[in-house]
Length: 272
Ligand code: ARG
Image 1 (cartoon, protein in one colour):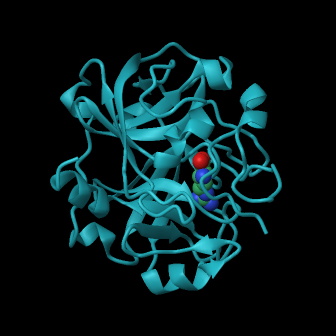
Image 2 (cartoon, protein in one colour):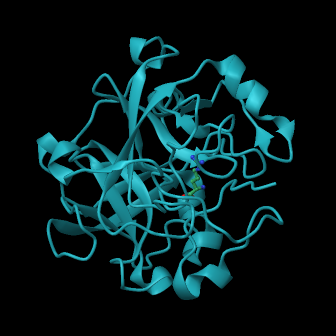
């Protein structure tokens, strides 16, 4: 049983502070396992969430991913900004920053932008991980070219079999081998029936099609992993998912599960 539900990247001193949601081993999966290096210019909307206070300075404090959907709006996973991860209720000042325009976390490239507001989806279920998204407001605007469009319900990008790419700085081998340079993996959107078969509600978790989608490759070996949470899954140039959870990383038959972005669109349109 290797469930990594609602578990953010746990590195360094902070590792001991983050309660695991299951008695699973502390072994991390891999961030973007089976992936390839990319330059941030190829996905300028991909951002890193940083808290040096909580995660130390070696990798610029990176602990989750995120994605810019507006010049001052970044989406991430709700579980990334939980009190358990940040050590304070969401919205408490802290040193939460969004790192933009940086390929390599060991460099000073790009910008670090403070977060002025954190909004967690009130429908987020910490038990099932349904509705795993949050909205961060940036202190200063990003260039318009750093924004990606969200795919609304009915968008063809959600069709099973569609090619999709996930981006992140997470574990690249499944061995807590946290990348310092951005990576991506090519996946495909899987049919809900397959996701439901993989996660029927056993100890590995329960797939709920209304707020989740899953993506992977039949043979396994390519997936998001620990530390990639909150980051983008992109298909046909539009944002369709946010890295959320999975059982292990890249295991055949255990695809990665993502927050379904059409549900984010719907929720935000309803006013927050
Ligand atoms: N919960 C993990 C995180 O916070 C993401 C896990 C994704 N796992 C997967 N097999 N796709 O970084």
